[in-house]
Length: 340
Image (cartoon, rainbow, N blue to C red; front, top):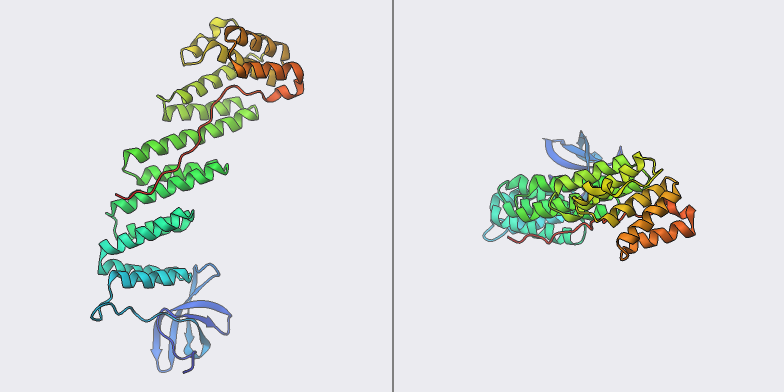
Protein backbone atom coordinates (compact mmCIF):
# COMPACT_ATOMS: atom_id res chain seq x y z
CA UNK A 1 0.00 0.00 0.00
CA UNK A 2 1.20 3.49 -0.79
CA UNK A 3 3.07 4.86 2.26
CA UNK A 4 1.90 8.37 1.37
CA UNK A 5 -1.75 7.40 1.75
CA UNK A 6 -1.58 4.87 4.58
CA UNK A 7 -1.50 7.52 7.29
CA UNK A 8 -2.81 7.58 10.87
CA UNK A 9 -2.75 9.99 13.78
CA UNK A 10 0.64 10.68 15.46
CA UNK A 11 2.62 9.39 12.48
CA UNK A 12 5.73 11.45 11.80
CA UNK A 13 5.69 12.67 8.21
CA UNK A 14 7.88 14.57 5.80
CA UNK A 15 6.24 17.44 3.93
CA UNK A 16 7.62 16.89 0.46
CA UNK A 17 7.23 20.44 -0.84
CA UNK A 18 8.90 22.03 2.19
CA UNK A 19 11.34 19.30 3.25
CA UNK A 20 10.17 19.79 6.85
CA UNK A 21 9.15 17.28 9.48
CA UNK A 22 5.91 17.12 11.42
CA UNK A 23 3.37 15.02 13.27
CA UNK A 24 -0.19 14.29 12.20
CA UNK A 25 -2.49 15.69 14.87
CA UNK A 26 -5.90 15.74 13.16
CA UNK A 27 -7.62 14.61 9.98
CA UNK A 28 -9.47 17.51 8.40
CA UNK A 29 -11.22 15.80 5.49
CA UNK A 30 -11.62 12.19 4.44
CA UNK A 31 -12.33 12.68 0.73
CA UNK A 32 -9.95 13.96 -0.42
CA UNK A 33 -7.82 13.21 2.67
CA UNK A 34 -6.10 16.18 4.29
CA UNK A 35 -4.40 16.51 7.67
CA UNK A 36 -3.42 19.10 10.24
CA UNK A 37 0.35 18.73 10.72
CA UNK A 38 2.32 20.03 13.69
CA UNK A 39 5.68 21.06 12.19
CA UNK A 40 8.74 20.76 14.46
CA UNK A 41 12.34 21.92 14.30
CA UNK A 42 15.40 19.63 14.50
CA UNK A 43 15.04 19.40 18.31
CA UNK A 44 11.41 18.32 18.10
CA UNK A 45 10.05 21.69 19.25
CA UNK A 46 6.72 22.63 17.55
CA UNK A 47 7.02 25.70 15.33
CA UNK A 48 3.73 25.91 13.38
CA UNK A 49 0.56 24.11 12.26
CA UNK A 50 -0.04 23.42 8.56
CA UNK A 51 -2.83 21.77 6.57
CA UNK A 52 -1.61 19.40 3.87
CA UNK A 53 -3.20 17.04 1.38
CA UNK A 54 -2.31 13.38 2.03
CA UNK A 55 -0.57 13.19 -1.35
CA UNK A 56 1.93 15.79 -0.13
CA UNK A 57 2.94 13.73 2.91
CA UNK A 58 5.34 10.82 3.23
CA UNK A 59 5.56 8.63 6.33
CA UNK A 60 8.91 8.91 8.14
CA UNK A 61 8.04 7.14 11.39
CA UNK A 62 4.94 5.08 12.00
CA UNK A 63 3.01 5.26 15.26
CA UNK A 64 2.93 1.80 16.89
CA UNK A 65 -0.40 0.09 17.22
CA UNK A 66 -2.26 0.87 20.42
CA UNK A 67 -1.34 -1.61 23.17
CA UNK A 68 -3.84 -4.37 23.57
CA UNK A 69 -3.20 -5.41 27.19
CA UNK A 70 -5.23 -8.17 28.74
CA UNK A 71 -8.71 -8.73 27.34
CA UNK A 72 -8.20 -5.82 24.96
CA UNK A 73 -7.74 -3.21 27.74
CA UNK A 74 -4.30 -1.52 27.77
CA UNK A 75 -2.63 -1.47 31.18
CA UNK A 76 -0.60 1.35 32.69
CA UNK A 77 2.57 -0.56 31.81
CA UNK A 78 1.39 -1.04 28.21
CA UNK A 79 0.92 2.71 27.84
CA UNK A 80 4.19 3.40 29.65
CA UNK A 81 6.18 1.16 27.31
CA UNK A 82 4.64 2.80 24.27
CA UNK A 83 5.36 6.26 25.69
CA UNK A 84 8.95 5.24 26.34
CA UNK A 85 9.30 4.10 22.73
CA UNK A 86 8.03 7.46 21.52
CA UNK A 87 10.36 9.29 23.89
CA UNK A 88 13.36 7.29 22.69
CA UNK A 89 12.53 8.39 19.15
CA UNK A 90 12.47 12.04 20.14
CA UNK A 91 8.68 12.41 19.91
CA UNK A 92 8.25 14.30 23.17
CA UNK A 93 4.75 15.72 22.74
CA UNK A 94 3.39 12.35 21.59
CA UNK A 95 5.11 10.57 24.49
CA UNK A 96 3.54 13.01 26.92
CA UNK A 97 0.09 12.17 25.56
CA UNK A 98 0.66 8.41 25.88
CA UNK A 99 2.13 8.73 29.38
CA UNK A 100 -1.04 10.58 30.33
CA UNK A 101 -2.99 7.46 29.26
CA UNK A 102 -0.75 5.39 31.52
CA UNK A 103 -1.65 7.56 34.50
CA UNK A 104 -5.33 7.43 33.63
CA UNK A 105 -5.12 3.63 33.57
CA UNK A 106 -3.36 3.33 36.96
CA UNK A 107 -1.69 6.40 38.49
CA UNK A 108 0.15 4.43 41.18
CA UNK A 109 1.76 2.00 38.74
CA UNK A 110 2.54 4.74 36.24
CA UNK A 111 4.18 6.87 38.94
CA UNK A 112 6.40 3.98 40.05
CA UNK A 113 7.41 3.13 36.48
CA UNK A 114 8.23 6.74 35.63
CA UNK A 115 10.11 7.24 38.91
CA UNK A 116 12.28 4.18 38.23
CA UNK A 117 12.98 5.40 34.71
CA UNK A 118 13.96 8.82 36.07
CA UNK A 119 16.20 7.13 38.67
CA UNK A 120 18.06 5.14 36.01
CA UNK A 121 18.41 8.26 33.90
CA UNK A 122 19.63 10.48 36.73
CA UNK A 123 22.07 7.84 37.99
CA UNK A 124 23.75 7.94 34.57
CA UNK A 125 24.21 11.69 35.00
CA UNK A 126 21.53 12.73 32.50
CA UNK A 127 19.98 15.19 34.94
CA UNK A 128 17.99 17.13 32.34
CA UNK A 129 16.12 14.01 31.21
CA UNK A 130 15.51 12.94 34.82
CA UNK A 131 14.11 16.38 35.67
CA UNK A 132 11.81 16.20 32.64
CA UNK A 133 10.49 12.78 33.69
CA UNK A 134 9.98 13.72 37.33
CA UNK A 135 8.25 16.96 36.36
CA UNK A 136 6.00 14.91 34.09
CA UNK A 137 5.06 12.64 36.99
CA UNK A 138 4.05 15.62 39.11
CA UNK A 139 2.10 17.09 36.20
CA UNK A 140 -0.10 13.99 36.18
CA UNK A 141 0.11 13.12 39.90
CA UNK A 142 0.85 16.32 41.91
CA UNK A 143 0.63 14.54 45.27
CA UNK A 144 3.27 11.91 44.48
CA UNK A 145 5.66 12.75 47.32
CA UNK A 146 8.44 10.38 46.29
CA UNK A 147 8.62 11.97 42.84
CA UNK A 148 8.67 15.45 44.37
CA UNK A 149 11.55 14.55 46.69
CA UNK A 150 13.53 12.87 43.90
CA UNK A 151 13.04 15.97 41.75
CA UNK A 152 14.56 18.02 44.58
CA UNK A 153 17.48 15.59 44.86
CA UNK A 154 18.05 15.65 41.10
CA UNK A 155 18.33 19.43 41.17
CA UNK A 156 20.73 19.12 44.11
CA UNK A 157 22.95 16.56 42.36
CA UNK A 158 23.00 18.56 39.14
CA UNK A 159 24.00 21.60 41.20
CA UNK A 160 26.88 19.64 42.75
CA UNK A 161 28.07 18.57 39.28
CA UNK A 162 27.92 22.18 38.09
CA UNK A 163 29.76 23.47 41.17
CA UNK A 164 32.55 20.95 40.68
CA UNK A 165 32.97 22.27 37.13
CA UNK A 166 33.21 25.82 38.46
CA UNK A 167 29.78 26.90 37.17
CA UNK A 168 28.82 28.34 40.55
CA UNK A 169 26.03 30.68 39.44
CA UNK A 170 24.15 27.81 37.74
CA UNK A 171 24.78 25.60 40.75
CA UNK A 172 23.19 28.20 43.02
CA UNK A 173 20.06 28.19 40.85
CA UNK A 174 19.78 24.40 41.20
CA UNK A 175 20.32 24.49 44.96
CA UNK A 176 17.55 27.08 45.28
CA UNK A 177 15.29 24.86 43.15
CA UNK A 178 16.04 22.01 45.54
CA UNK A 179 14.71 24.06 48.45
CA UNK A 180 11.55 24.86 46.49
CA UNK A 181 10.73 21.18 45.96
CA UNK A 182 11.89 19.35 49.04
CA UNK A 183 10.01 18.82 52.29
CA UNK A 184 12.69 16.64 53.91
CA UNK A 185 14.79 18.15 56.68
CA UNK A 186 17.82 16.05 55.68
CA UNK A 187 17.67 17.39 52.11
CA UNK A 188 17.30 20.97 53.34
CA UNK A 189 20.36 20.52 55.56
CA UNK A 190 22.47 19.05 52.76
CA UNK A 191 21.32 21.70 50.30
CA UNK A 192 22.17 24.45 52.80
CA UNK A 193 25.64 23.00 53.16
CA UNK A 194 26.05 23.04 49.37
CA UNK A 195 24.90 26.66 49.24
CA UNK A 196 27.57 27.46 51.83
CA UNK A 197 30.12 25.66 49.65
CA UNK A 198 29.06 27.61 46.56
CA UNK A 199 29.18 31.00 48.32
CA UNK A 200 32.55 30.12 49.83
CA UNK A 201 33.91 29.30 46.39
CA UNK A 202 32.63 32.63 45.06
CA UNK A 203 34.25 34.38 48.01
CA UNK A 204 37.60 32.68 47.42
CA UNK A 205 37.38 33.56 43.73
CA UNK A 206 36.93 37.26 44.56
CA UNK A 207 39.57 37.17 47.27
CA UNK A 208 42.09 35.75 44.80
CA UNK A 209 41.68 38.77 42.52
CA UNK A 210 41.90 41.19 45.50
CA UNK A 211 38.20 42.09 45.48
CA UNK A 212 38.12 41.93 49.26
CA UNK A 213 34.78 43.61 49.88
CA UNK A 214 33.02 41.41 47.33
CA UNK A 215 34.66 38.37 48.93
CA UNK A 216 33.44 39.52 52.34
CA UNK A 217 29.88 39.72 50.99
CA UNK A 218 29.93 36.05 49.95
CA UNK A 219 31.63 34.92 53.14
CA UNK A 220 28.90 36.68 55.07
CA UNK A 221 26.18 34.95 53.01
CA UNK A 222 27.80 31.59 53.78
CA UNK A 223 27.93 32.46 57.48
CA UNK A 224 24.28 33.56 57.51
CA UNK A 225 23.25 30.19 56.09
CA UNK A 226 25.35 28.25 58.59
CA UNK A 227 26.05 30.45 61.65
CA UNK A 228 26.77 27.38 63.79
CA UNK A 229 29.40 26.09 61.37
CA UNK A 230 32.95 26.63 62.62
CA UNK A 231 34.48 26.78 59.14
CA UNK A 232 32.00 29.38 57.85
CA UNK A 233 32.52 31.53 60.94
CA UNK A 234 36.32 31.35 60.79
CA UNK A 235 36.34 32.06 57.05
CA UNK A 236 34.28 35.20 57.70
CA UNK A 237 36.68 36.26 60.46
CA UNK A 238 39.69 35.77 58.15
CA UNK A 239 37.98 37.88 55.49
CA UNK A 240 37.40 40.63 58.09
CA UNK A 241 41.10 40.55 59.04
CA UNK A 242 41.99 40.86 55.36
CA UNK A 243 39.63 43.83 54.98
CA UNK A 244 41.25 45.47 58.00
CA UNK A 245 44.69 45.03 56.43
CA UNK A 246 43.49 46.37 53.08
CA UNK A 247 41.84 49.42 54.68
CA UNK A 248 45.00 50.23 56.61
CA UNK A 249 46.95 49.79 53.39
CA UNK A 250 49.10 47.19 55.12
CA UNK A 251 51.52 49.96 55.99
CA UNK A 252 51.98 48.94 59.62
CA UNK A 253 51.32 46.03 61.93
CA UNK A 254 48.60 46.91 64.45
CA UNK A 255 48.79 46.03 68.11
CA UNK A 256 47.59 42.58 69.04
CA UNK A 257 44.61 44.08 70.89
CA UNK A 258 43.24 45.03 67.46
CA UNK A 259 42.73 41.36 66.69
CA UNK A 260 40.69 40.62 69.81
CA UNK A 261 37.31 40.80 68.06
CA UNK A 262 38.50 38.25 65.50
CA UNK A 263 39.78 35.84 68.14
CA UNK A 264 36.32 36.01 69.71
CA UNK A 265 34.99 34.69 66.38
CA UNK A 266 37.15 31.59 66.72
CA UNK A 267 40.52 32.53 65.20
CA UNK A 268 43.77 32.17 67.03
CA UNK A 269 46.03 35.21 67.23
CA UNK A 270 48.53 33.38 65.02
CA UNK A 271 45.83 32.84 62.35
CA UNK A 272 44.95 36.54 62.48
CA UNK A 273 48.56 37.57 62.06
CA UNK A 274 49.03 35.19 59.13
CA UNK A 275 45.95 36.59 57.34
CA UNK A 276 47.11 40.16 57.97
CA UNK A 277 50.61 39.36 56.70
CA UNK A 278 49.31 37.56 53.59
CA UNK A 279 47.11 40.55 52.70
CA UNK A 280 49.96 43.03 53.31
CA UNK A 281 52.19 40.97 51.02
CA UNK A 282 49.55 41.07 48.31
CA UNK A 283 49.48 44.85 48.60
CA UNK A 284 53.26 45.00 48.23
CA UNK A 285 54.12 45.85 51.85
CA UNK A 286 56.63 43.06 52.28
CA UNK A 287 58.34 44.31 55.44
CA UNK A 288 55.00 44.52 57.26
CA UNK A 289 54.09 41.11 55.87
CA UNK A 290 57.33 39.57 57.17
CA UNK A 291 56.84 41.17 60.59
CA UNK A 292 53.28 39.83 60.84
CA UNK A 293 54.28 36.34 59.74
CA UNK A 294 57.26 36.19 62.11
CA UNK A 295 55.00 37.27 64.96
CA UNK A 296 52.48 34.59 63.93
CA UNK A 297 55.20 31.96 64.29
CA UNK A 298 56.37 33.37 67.61
CA UNK A 299 52.84 33.08 68.97
CA UNK A 300 52.36 29.59 67.51
CA UNK A 301 55.46 27.80 66.19
CA UNK A 302 53.20 25.00 64.81
CA UNK A 303 51.46 27.35 62.34
CA UNK A 304 52.78 25.69 59.19
CA UNK A 305 50.84 28.03 56.87
CA UNK A 306 52.51 31.12 58.37
CA UNK A 307 55.87 29.35 58.14
CA UNK A 308 55.31 28.57 54.46
CA UNK A 309 54.09 32.11 53.70
CA UNK A 310 57.12 33.65 55.42
CA UNK A 311 59.43 31.43 53.39
CA UNK A 312 57.73 32.54 50.14
CA UNK A 313 57.95 36.25 51.04
CA UNK A 314 61.61 35.94 52.00
CA UNK A 315 62.64 33.83 49.02
CA UNK A 316 60.51 35.13 46.16
CA UNK A 317 58.80 38.51 46.68
CA UNK A 318 57.10 38.32 43.28
CA UNK A 319 55.31 35.14 44.39
CA UNK A 320 54.04 36.86 47.54
CA UNK A 321 51.08 38.47 45.77
CA UNK A 322 48.84 35.44 46.32
CA UNK A 323 49.60 34.08 49.76
CA UNK A 324 46.79 32.00 51.30
CA UNK A 325 44.89 33.53 54.21
CA UNK A 326 43.98 30.16 55.67
CA UNK A 327 40.46 30.06 54.28
CA UNK A 328 39.00 26.55 54.15
CA UNK A 329 36.74 25.69 51.21
CA UNK A 330 33.78 23.32 51.36
CA UNK A 331 33.44 20.36 49.05
CA UNK A 332 29.86 20.06 47.73
CA UNK A 333 28.09 16.79 48.49
CA UNK A 334 25.62 14.89 46.32
CA UNK A 335 22.70 12.87 47.67
CA UNK A 336 21.45 9.32 47.10
CA UNK A 337 18.12 8.69 45.37
CA UNK A 338 15.15 8.61 47.72
CA UNK A 339 13.27 5.31 47.88
CA UNK A 340 10.61 6.18 50.44
